[in-house]
Structure formats: C-alpha cells, structure tokens
Image (cartoon, rainbow, N blue to C red; front, side):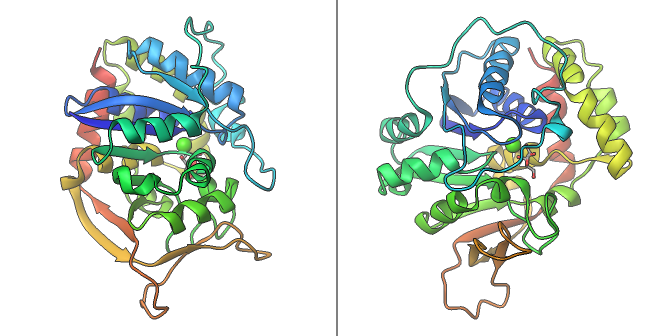
Length: 308
Ligand code: BDR
Ligand code: CA
C-alpha cells in the first residue's frame, strides 16, 4: 500500500477528502498533521479526531502550529461554521492528539516511508514549511506531493487574486514551493471547473452509513451558504485534490509550469503567479491540474460517504 500523510485544517471539504482517503484500499493513511486555517487549531484538531472516530480510522493525529509564520490571517469560519464543522455541537472525541508536533511527525514519517511517501496538503502550508526549515532534505524522501492551493489564472476566492490556503500563510507557501523540485497542484480554478451539483450531493448524503449521516450534519451550513452565494454547484476543493492524489490516472489535462507566490503587493499578496509563457527561466516545478475525470471524482465521493 502507498503510505499517505495528510496535512489538513478540517474544515468541511477537508473532511470529505479524509473520508475518501480512509476509504481507499490502495493507500494507508499513516498520519494526519493538523494546520490552523479554516478555523483555529483547537477546532481543526478536535474535528480531525472526531472524524477519525466516526470513520473508525485508527490514524494518529498531530497538532501543528496555531498561527501563520509571519502575519496573522482571518479564518474561514463564515464558510465552514465557527467550529469548522458546521456548529452541530457533536460530543467531544474520546481520543486526544499525539504529543509529537506535526512538523516533527512529518519529518519522522518521511524517514519511515522514505521514497514511498505520498504527501497531501489540504490547508495552509505552515507545518510543512516548518518541517522544511528543520530539515531541508525532506523533499528527497517524498515520492509525490499534492497540494490544494492557489488560483493559477488569478481568480482567487479570498481576495480577487489569492486562494485561501496560500493567502492564509503566503510565506509558508513560498518556502514550500521553493524547496520542492516538483509538486502537483489542484487549485481553486480547477475546483470551480469540477463543481458538484447540490442535488447529487444531497442524494449521496442519504446513504445508510454513519459517515454519510455525520457528513450531512457537518456540511449543512456550508452547503446552504454555497447555494446562497454560488448557486447550483458545490465546490469541494480538498476533495478534488484528494481524488487527484488517490487516482492520478483520472487527470485529463496537466500543465507543467514555473510558479511563485506573491509576498508583497497591495492587491495580490498570496497570489500564485504562474509563468504561462515560460520566459522567466525558472524550472517547471508545478504540475497544474486543469481537468479531471468528473465521473471518477464523483464516484470516489459517493463511495467514501456510503462506506463504513
Ligand atoms: C481551501 O480553503 C479552505 O477553505 C478549504 O478547506 C480548501 O482547503 C479552498 O480555497
Ligand atoms: Ca482545507
């Protein structure tokens, strides 16, 4: 099995991505390292533990860093619920997070699974940046690195230019994208191109499983917000990134390009700047997901909700 380490800030779409990972027989989820982002770290850790409990997933959870590297950033509680899981008031999880810090767990697991590790980042990149500062050789041990983040043609979701995960901690994203020689990116615009019709989602949530029941509850607020703000389709960014990570053969169009993160800028801080014309002389580090098999994406989600 492929060892899969997920850095995440659950988060409603993170939760769906995690259920997809738990349900995949070809991958073994070896840890969840938790970032702050969608909501504060105390909530994202608790949400991760609760989701593992609901899914009967015996996966260690490591708390990471509560703040971005340099500048404080507003969270996305208005999208995901103030607790990040739709404010349904679920009973506290029985298990606690491990004592080890997320950045150290990333490094330890990278040694344990050196050369085989699939690393997937579904939140701000603070923990991975810290791990890289502690040990810059990390990328040598990671077989594949898939990131949900960015807005490659400049249509952001948190500012006109920037996507949330990158905007929340641009310095971390800069450190990470500079350090890895190669990474795969499922950005916000790919998400928009792979919307999920709300009627289908509601159907999938009727599955007779503990996972579907829990997910129907925690996602309700954000789905209603989405219908109100964005119309017929729901955009589950982290789920698309996870589909791409689990079944890369579903990618129908990938483009390799140089990519940099804007750290200054009065309008574009946190923007992912892609050198589409490849004229800047920088390497084609980023493999950009432009199109993914929609039927395959939806089948992975449906199966993940129905399982267990
Ligand atoms: C990303 O930001 C978060 O709100 C989601 O969980 C996803 O990781 C989308 O921009
Ligand atoms: Ca996320």
